[in-house]
Amino acid sequence: MPLKLYQFAISHYSEKVRWALDYKGIAYEPEFLLPGMHGKTVCGLTGQGKTSVPVLVDSGMAIQGSNKILDHLDSAFPDKPLLPQDTNGQAAARAWEERLDDEAGPAVRTFAYHHLLQRPKVVAPLLTAKTAFWNQYLLRLGFSRVDEAMREMMNINEKTAARAQATIENLLEEINGIYRDGQYLAGASFSRADITAGALFAPLFMPPEYPVPWPKPGRLPPGLKEWHQQRGALLEPVAECYRTHH
Ligand SMILES: N[C@@H](CCC(=O)N[C@@H](CS)C(=O)NCC(=O)O)C(=O)O
Image (cartoon, rainbow, N blue to C red; front, side, top):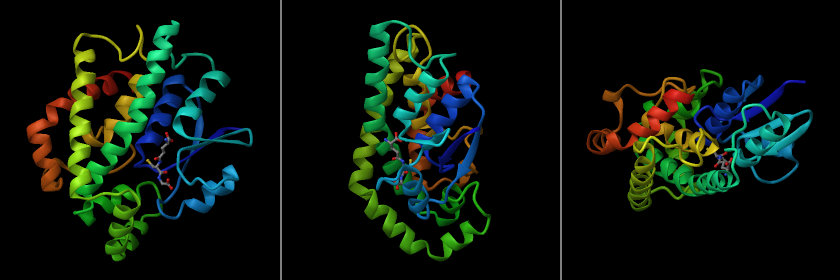
């Protein structure tokens, strides 16, 4: 039975798992869910109350959370391991992954949505990507409710977006120091730490391989456009790692 990955196209934690699966050459069936309408499906798979994606189903077993999914992939498919070989490298990779999952993922989400939600025509195709084409029109019809619900659920506002921006810039400066020395984030080889950084920052550098219709630079909301002009170079080392290893 093929593996099945339940995900949102736009989800950067899902991108982490898509990349790990591709990197290891594991075939799988993608199942794209519509954000907001996904809860029942996800809870039906896991038998629990937590609604987040990604969820991987392997031989009837549902695994929720990118970190646990990567653990499962390495234990079920040992070729092309996602961790460095040495123990210190493994501990460092896990520490980077945990920190990026906890800090970079939410910060990128808060910062990006704060700006993107100001442009319904831009954000609707991103949220509904890979689902029925009419969803983006339905979403735009009820947009003020969606905007309000997303901001409330993820605590997104001017203040939290400014804090998220500072978190993003500090993390990127630290990561860039490591990549500029020609190193990987952890240990001596490419690992899940690099995958986590590349995937979680990807919505900011918008790689063409990511399965959503990114807006053309001219259509970015002003706050994002300005940030790209002033601070976009910070993304280059992480984007380069994504281009090289994706
Ligand atoms: N730590 C989790 C985070 C997953 C997460 O935040 N997923 C978001 C999409 S990027 C989500 O599913 N949000 C909707 C929900 O929680 O119901 C992981 O690594 O998988």
